[in-house]
Image (cartoon, rainbow, N blue to C red; front, side, top):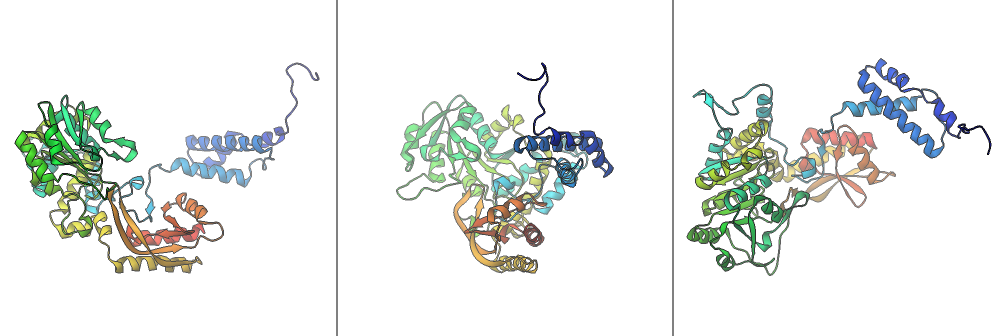
Length: 466
């Protein structure tokens, strides 16, 4: 044993570690460039900690006391601290309702309405003519009734919440009948049986995975039945030897037996005159068939903010409105303002298709898409990047119309020797981030989910990244 007690030999990394500047020294340099004290210290500490770990892991020598490499790292971390985590991205994937990228982009009137309400106080729950407390639902209920033909309406924070509330209010403590073929799992691993369980209703399964008949429902209805639920299989389809009951005969049977029908139609296809929506269940059809409550999303095919919309008969909607869960699941004021503005566009069907981004993307013409794809190709070529216009299929996304492929022109980018994965990484981490999709070694920029300004910005970001 050598050396005195408590002493230790200097490790091979000690000189490199000792050469690192103090946190205060590095922070002072950042402050001299305009950073606040708090952020400068956080960025400096994170930078030096990371450099210290790197030296210990690789036994590398440190740079000079305050080298440009260390300072650049600190500046980069400072930019990260200043930048909001939730920020806009350019969606060049061709997936119109991209759940990971925020689903439906809002129409301009909805943005204006939300901003105007956010800037101060509002009459969210105040009746201006009467000068007394009112209901936030009053701002959209009349619109929804007019647009859907329903007697009453209620808006919540999302469609899963609307389904949960309907099950709890109409079948809590009783039985809820559902076809086995409709026991679906929605995004984020949320399953319909688990939602029903949280409502306090007992699930009664009828039929089989591929075939359910009207007689199956008829046999299942009994004295403990609270409601029948239909659930649209929004994100998949079953083909072949299949059978399911249409909404009209099911509602007729339910009316004869005095049982309400809850119809979860998912994506909220409210637009008229849009052939691309032909395979989605219509809100008006379910209401006209006699469903007690119809539930759908506000931020999918409707093209508005996140919301769960319930429309239907006055008695059943009122039971939902007065249930304790309604308070916990209610919509916030900014989303309500955006929803009202979006719904008002639907009063003029042509304006809805023209001004609601989701509908505009679904109905984009070949000429429009081709012009935008060529615009990107030209900007890329001027920047020295090899690109060409090819054809590819876009998707609706968001669990809607899973079989629909929207064929059209796209701009395909040759990523060069670094490869498509590295180019995609650089685009994701840039400002603004650009998200495309890879195909056979090329990066595709789909003009369907970009406007003209977005297409120019996406192409410029690719040039910078390459």
